[in-house]
Length: 145
Ligand code: ZNH
Image 1 (cartoon, rainbow, N blue to C red):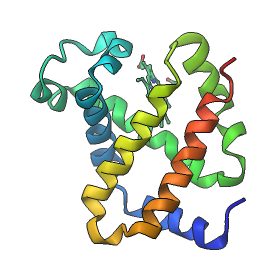
Image 2 (image 1 turned 90 degrees about the vertical axis):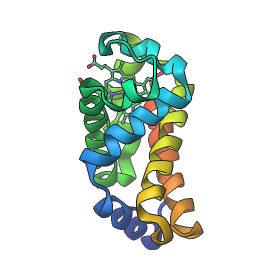
Image 3 (image 1 turned 90 degrees about the horizontal axis):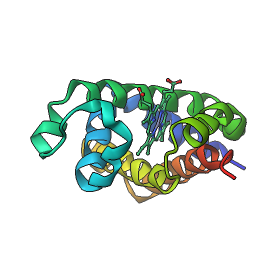
């Protein structure tokens, strides 16, 4: 389902991503733009303002966890669904995350990456990257029923 071109594009984008930067920034962005996502992070503290979100160490730490998990998908592009089966189940059964939020976060990841790669992320690269994240989103939803 992936062409060689798509595989190498996803790998090339991934190699340029600094997890410690993109993870915290993307998660902060989703919390700022879609404030209702805060409800899942009751333990994060008081995220009332953008600067509170951006300066929250737990947001940063969790952002890194989420981005690190993407590495698994990059390494298992042909089997993303199985790779994330347990993670999907966790979000469904235990965390009760509304699955619509996965796409919101995926979009925030793309925006954050685009802001860093700039011209290196042309339309073709962006389309392939979004197709990849779309497969990730589908996989995270796979155990919802
Ligand atoms: Zn999530 C958790 C991944 C999205 C919410 N996550 C988590 C983890 C991981 C993840 C890896 C850890 C697990 C364990 O510990 O075992 N996520 C992820 C990914 C994604 C996501 C990859 C996409 C892309 N999440 C999400 C969203 C949300 C969430 C969208 C909401 C809104 N998560 C969450 C929570 C948690 C998690 C709440 C838990 C945290 C703590 O720490 O507690």
